[in-house]
Every structure is written in structure tokens, then in C-alpha cells.
Length: 282
Image 1: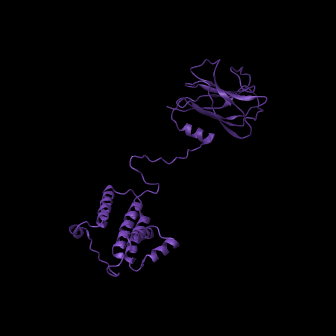
Image 2: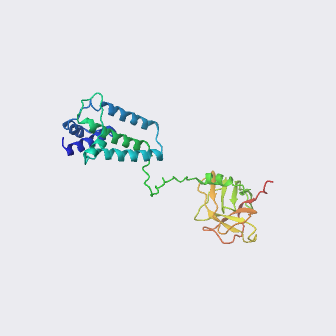
Image 3: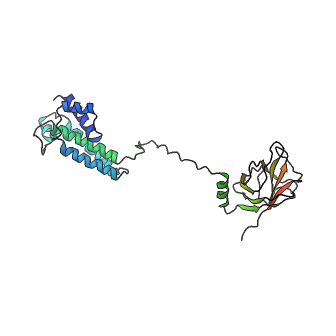
């Protein structure tokens, strides 16, 4: 067998023990003189390593990494041709096979393939499925899917903050309005939500609803514009507050009906609901 044929057989054996061969490669291996009976003990060893892979995957211990590197280097060195008779006496490994003919091609080639296969399986066993972390290269973190909350969920989450204040809607100066609900606000987050039940649908081409925030920074004549909004369906509605100025320590909230687009200062002729802030619980 030539050196090229031995190298080719070694490559095929490694692939066979670790990954398996397709029909074409298996045929090439047979043509090179491969005898499955001679490789039985090696294949059983590799199979045991493969089964171990199913039970555990973790980071390879540093000590084991070093042993693999040293063993691989020693094995490669032992395969180099001896340059002197003294070197040959030191480097020539003694090969003992059970169940196979003495001096056959598998004498050194089979064990060479098994050694490389075992190293490959050990690396596979201790390599995370996400990939190998190359030294000096920071792995790209797996993108985390951002949680998307609807307005009701965002309102509930805001209420979990201890500094959030709440006001319940009461009657305004418009007759026939039976509206309930509440408003929550956080100074820290400068965010809040209005909740309504029974607020009539409006025609955006004719009118719009507008929120006003009465706080300690503004005169009662010019409360903070909390944004305009429309109601398109009956039932419960949760609307995010869109404060145009920074609000601090709100005392009350009010919703009025205004012209489309809203106004800078309301005449307060149509106050739909008014909600004084509840005093903090001591």
C-alpha cells in the first residue's frame, strides 16, 4: 500500500467512525482493502463515545483540552518516520491486535483512525451546539425577542410601580354621560394610561377627545395638554397619555370634547369626565 493510499484510508476511516460513509466512499474503502472484522473493537469504542454524547453536552474542562492537545502531538510525532535506528527503537510503537491478523494494514492504520475519531468525538461532545467560541472572538449574542404588550398590559405593568398615582373618572358638566374607568400616571416614567367604559364613539371629522393634566407646575387655567384621541367602538378602551409637557405631581385629570386636532387652551364647555387623584395610601 502506498503512502497516498494509507492517507486516503485514514481519512475514510475517520469519517466512517465519526460521521458514517455514503455508498461511494464505502466502496472506495473496500477497494483499499478494508476488512470490517478487523475494525470491530475500534468501532465499538467509538460507538460508546457517541452514546455518551447523547447524555451530556458541556464545556470541555481546561485540563482535558490540554491532555487532548498533548496526546495529539505525541501521536503525530509517533507516526513520523524514524531518521535513525536509535530513533526507530524509541518511536516504533508496539501494536497488539486481538481478533485480527498480525501485521495487517489495520495494525497501525486502524488505531490511527480510532485515535483521530476519538479526539473528534471528544471535541464534539464538549462543544456547545451554538458553535465553537474562538479565542479572542466574542460570540454574537442570540437576539432576544422583545415582548410586545398591548395598552391594557402596559397599563397593568405601570400600576406595579409604587409611585404610580390613580384617579377614577367622575361626572363632568355634560348631561347624559355615563362613563366610568380611571387614569394612571407615573412621574418617574412620564407615562400613563386612560381607561374608559361607556365613552361614546366620536366622529373624527367633527370632534375629538382631549385630555388635560392639572399638576403643580401649571396654572389651573392652563393645564398640560395630555393629547387627543378618538373612540371608534363601544366597550372598554385603554388609551396612552401623550403629555406635551413634563407633568409633576398631578392633582386631577379631565377629558373634554374639542374640534378636530385639539386646542391649546380649552374653554371647558364640554367636560366629559373629571378625575381627582386619590391621596396616597399611608
